[in-house]
Image (cartoon, rainbow, N blue to C red; front, side, top):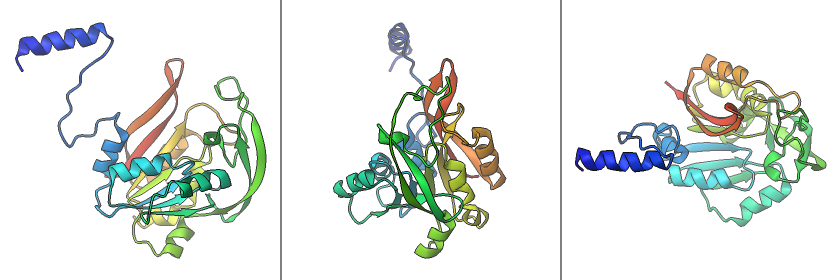
Length: 242
């Protein structure tokens, strides 16, 4: 392609408020999460923990990014767990109708009009939370396990990706994986970071990042960003062993 033609294409894109960015093959893109996970998760037979699997959206992404992976999906809500089972993902996916946290216990679980907001923690009604209007439909009691106990039970030597999307409860899940993190069993982490208070008693994004850094996991990039004005309200962050 000639320089003249490239300049013309760039000019048209700019008029449409679009940009063209060149990324070398094999580089992290910073915006295409499935592609970048394929670079971060290096094992062709990767083990993935999907904590907060909801309806199975992330399972589909992992099967695309890492076709040979084995997925252990954790979802405490009966309706969501049933949706995952109905998807018939096959032998690559093993479903546990459990929540994961820092200690093993039973806990109250808050369910909302939209299941993506379901959490052990209740929603915070502050003005920065753009979803504070979402109504809770019911509470139930769920069993909570810890990553470390599941690693022992399943006799796993590696978790190539620990994905956590538990609506404000994410740090508790990480604290339940301290043994696996210290042992170097966890190779990469995908976790939701909240920069505004969406749930009562949620831990800060800064605390989660510092915790992961202290266990040798470095930030790859931020994805799926939502904003409050011009600032990031929450996002998905990916970390990996250096």
